[in-house]
Image (tube, rainbow, N blue to C red; front, side):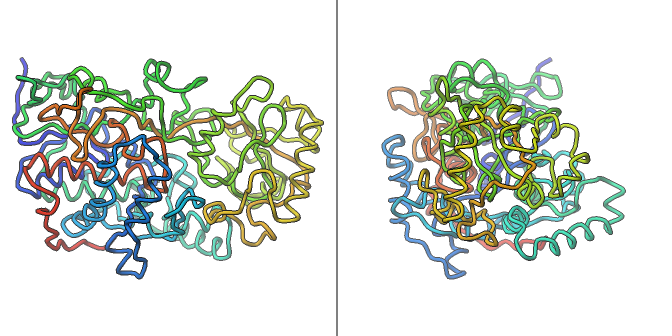
Length: 574
């Protein structure tokens, strides 16, 4: 027998954009219901770093880091061009800070603005920091029974599979800057001595990044008595007279029809792991190279298309060079490792072809753009010497001398190549030894001089954010001259797709003729991104997801953003 339920607003998906929408609807007096197809809530948002990119936030201004919205808009214009209608960009620049203020005032959500540079510091309007915001850590015991249902962090954001980092801590550890060792010792001691929690799980009680954000959102949902159904995949949208009035789904294997009086908000993620959609729309070659959660299979995209929605930018994604480590079901992005000294990236002809310290999105794009016969960049090779090996983390490897290489985890050793000389390493990775020797010789000369004459590595503030300031004159370079030498293959992966359903400035889904599909909204990676094919800075995925989730809920409730008041909510400390 088919069951039934009714609500004001049905939210499909349980990531940051979804839960922001559900909370906003509830706070504005509507009844909301969240459904999630998997057995865990949070999606890719929970497993991510959790940052949001918000120009001119109230918190940043209060700390003396006021931003000019006109500069933010100029920066986005330079990045996005004409890929996105101007009213959507206007909506983001105008309302993102209001969304964050609303969520921080009325829910448990809490963020800290960070001195994290924008990704394209060469463009007018870019800032050296305080648009990116990092979630305030959360103690997992506050989640109670919901902790077991929270999507775990990506392995990348956990050290030894046990504890995570704030953005500031991650920078310190990645670059092994002064203070890194004492900080690590403190965190490890706190972890080891937390015996009550150790008896429950190997995970640290202290949640950071996306887990902290989604944990705070889940606590807030509970405070508002908003139900969240797990194991409840949508099977179809319900339409009456051209208006979306609900959805059909399966709940624990039983068919259920949910009617939505005011609207349905799709926030179900992209099509990261759907092979057919990836093959049809994304650049090739491709494969299981996504860091998104495995449940992102394009369900919401297909449902929206069936309802008559237009689509855009389906060939686009949030790109990143990735490692493919045997036994890990998701790709492992290289966010900062490429910017560290004593390393380079080469194509299969043994030549450098990009600024290794550029943003992961730009680096991933370059891998596709420059892939060509005779100089394939898929895969490329990240090459480094023993000084890199002994000082920095990479994949499953912790910093240690070459004599300790026998203790590298087997999965990492399966992809790692090691040789006593550059010539021998070239043979192992099947690139022309003469080219590789020539490339490294030229790089070493430039590293000693401190200037990358070929690709400008280390020239921008972003390049130097994840750099080792103890290395001079260019903290992102450092010559490769001490053996043994190492190499790992890297691929152009993604953090998720970012093309999808076309929406307007209020997150309403549109048909190809520009008309509105009444009752249907979309936010996050199921919708074509308001950032187009660009990636302005850390948090430019979740920032728009939450902002347009907020705008969708307000619109469905018949509210304008100016009507959304920030009544104070006391956030319990982590």
